Image (cartoon, rainbow over all chains, first blue to last red; front, top):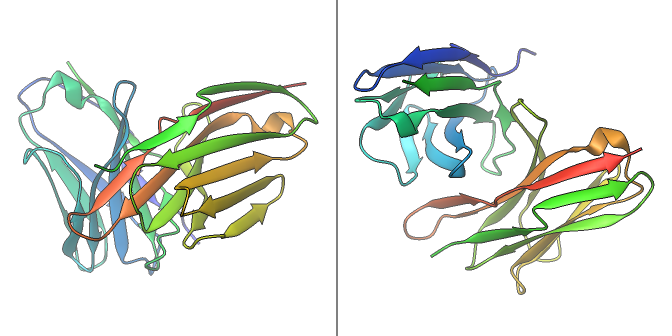
Length: 112
Length: 112
C-alpha cells in the first residue's frame, strides 16, 4: 500500500509570494491533517480535513488555508509569505476517529 | 489553556539501561499521542492512548496514561542505539474550541 506523499519536497519562495503544497493520503483514508514544524515554535497543528470539510483548525492566521478534494487529496495554501513561514510542513492521513496517523515525508519551505 | 510539558528535553543513556520520558498536560484532554522523529525525517506514530489507565507496548517502548494526574509516561526498556530519536507527546481536546498541542520533544541518544 502506498504511503502518504507530499509534493513538492523542497520549495524556495520570497516574501510576499504565495505557495500551495499538496498531500495525497493513503488510499481509503478520509482524514488529512497538516502540521508546521519550526525550530522556534516546534510542532503546531494547522488544520484537519475530513470528507472535503475542515473539521478542526489550529491557531494560525487566515493566510493559511486548505482544502480537500473528493479523492481525499488535500492542498494547503499560504498567501503573502513571511520569513517566519519557513518550516517543515507535514501532512498526515488517518482512517478512523482514533487518529492513528501516517505521516508524509514533509515539504520543506524556505522563505527568503 | 491547554499546555503540554515534556521532560527531560535531552536524554543520553547507555545501551541496556531503562529510562522514562514524562509528558504532563494542563487540562482535561481526549487523546494522548506519542510520536518518534528521526533527524531530518518526518513523524512516526507510536501510540494513541484514549482512557485512564491505558497501557500500550511495542517492542522496548511502553506508554501509559493517568488522566487524573494528567500524566503520560513513555518507558524505554533495555535501550538500544536504534531508539535514538526525538520523541514527542501531544494531546487533543475536542470540547469547545478544538486544540491539538505538542510537547517540546525529548531528544534521546543511546550510547553504545
